[in-house]
Image (cartoon, rainbow, N blue to C red):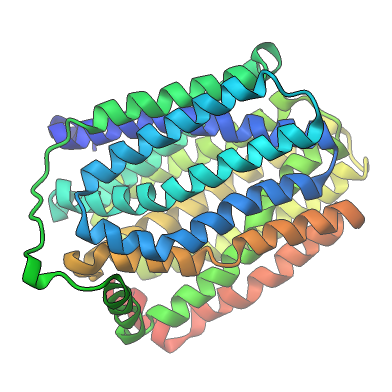
Length: 418
């Protein structure tokens, strides 16, 4: 995989992603902990997470149309510049704010701007990779990015856990803003072929969006598979975004560093999983990898939920809880990589390049469609009920989409074709 870095365009894309994702992880971890500490309300933190997700969700379909029409490299560095300047401005403004409502309003406003730009950045980044690397290297390239993303997460969370109490939320904004600016500068030097569509070939945005929708409807098995993934994401997303931060902050009364260690453990598992998938490469099939990975993921979700209930209820010591919870989280991360990487690679190969941006954006929108709702519902459950009820709901809801992916004939044919 390291041979990919010899390609100038790939190394520049990697460098930009590396810096900005460290800053983003640093920022997201710190802001989530800050809101939970400031308000002591799981609902307020759930609302913050959900707001960004809803905005990005609504913007993604239209963003996909622009990605297919415009220079993808330009999209990357322009959105990074906008995100950087927005976060820097937020860091400057937060210095003069004292009241809780003012602070929350600023945080919500910044996340709206970031989400709008994320809707353009992430699909453009994903669709640019197949244009930079040879098809034979696509699995390794995706595995490399997944691996590096995990390393970036480790670094970002470690910095946040160590420095959050020392620097304050204002410096978190400044560091993240600078990381976006540096990423944009790196991306400006990427050179890939781009041909502006001839005037006679230009179509309306509505037509282009319909083309992407029609592609998904006509691809056998794709719509039911996307629907299953949608409900799987709906079930599992609050586990990481709501349940684990609540567990460490309000149930176990631990410091931010302890949550950081848990997140680093999960990211380390993703690193190992990425190495395994990248090393195996073409030796594994999308169908077998996804089925086995999903089955193990759901099983580990049940196991971890039981451990979390015991830990939050003080039925076991914190030392014993940690000794069981962290290794289990590590295994969950490895299984997750055997799902995400093969599917992303197969989907990139299956979709024609001229519609890839539209289809990727629509698929991302569909699969993430209910996640903001799940964040809000999870926040409400934690606010007015308890962690055990939330974890039970997560486990039970995850079983139905798993059965669909394992046993639906059309979905199985799609996975086999990828």
